[in-house]
Length: 135
Image (cartoon, rainbow, N blue to C red; front, side):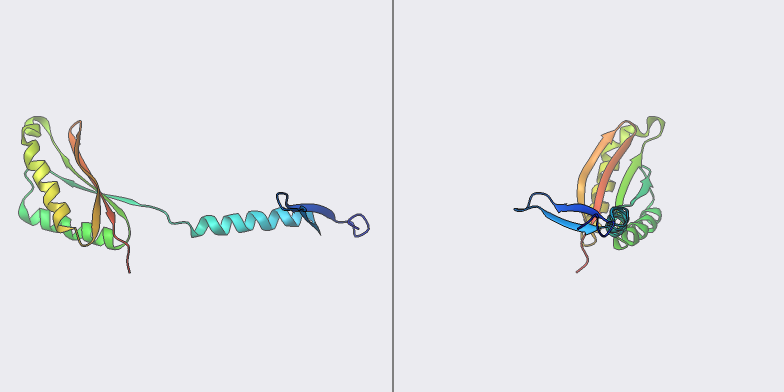
């Protein structure tokens, strides 16, 4: 039948009993399949990561300013990477950096949840916050 219509016999579902086949143009079938995959890929959520940098002795005003930005990022659905950067000898203020990040996490509790608690990596103390799902 496929030869009569000058089309191809394409196996659609090989695992079914009996296997499902269709008489269609194979190139058109491949084109539609690629189109479907592209549509699914475009609907997939893309995770963006926004960074906020603090110093170990960040002033209260600067902290509030950066917190506002963090809230905006989380409301927009982006993950937040907050880190304290230690320059030179400021590494002796590790506790202050950790307190700062934990304070930020506590104040952003209604907007996102902590994915990774503050962890020191080299001269940076990093913490990740993921946005909460919008209802």
